[in-house]
Length: 175
Image (cartoon, rainbow, N blue to C red; front, side, top):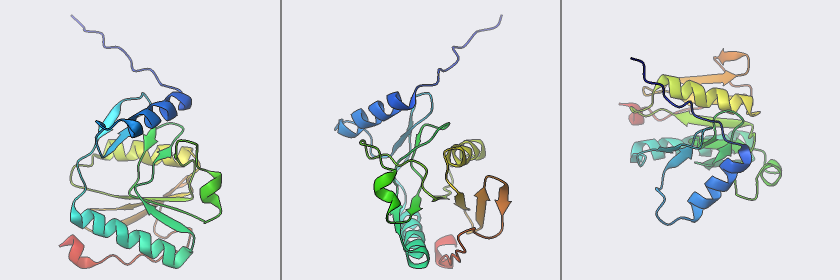
């Protein structure tokens, strides 16, 4: 006997934006969450101090090397992965006003960074990365658990950044 499961239904960007706004206004909402392209709520544990220190250092280096503005945990409306919150987002200063929706969601920032945590699963990370790239993000930087750095663009994995970044991560945060 085979049990048929309902296939999740994709929700429109407008519905995602509305749900995101409602969650932001709800005092009972969790602190760390995302919405999938199906409108499912994805809860995340509170980041560790090590994780937050690393994200802050990366944001500082992005701003120092590229100018513009680097923000930790800014929400992005993607085309195929829902509303996602990468660890760091970077854009030129002038673009921040242009790509922000009324609900304070970003659309297609130039660069996002994901700092992996032990609970991250590769299939979910791949889905998020593809969602970012399909939405117009030019480069996704993935920092591994041991401090490895991957630069991912539409044409695949690279060993250097298209933005000529030279990230230097504190080794004590990976020991």
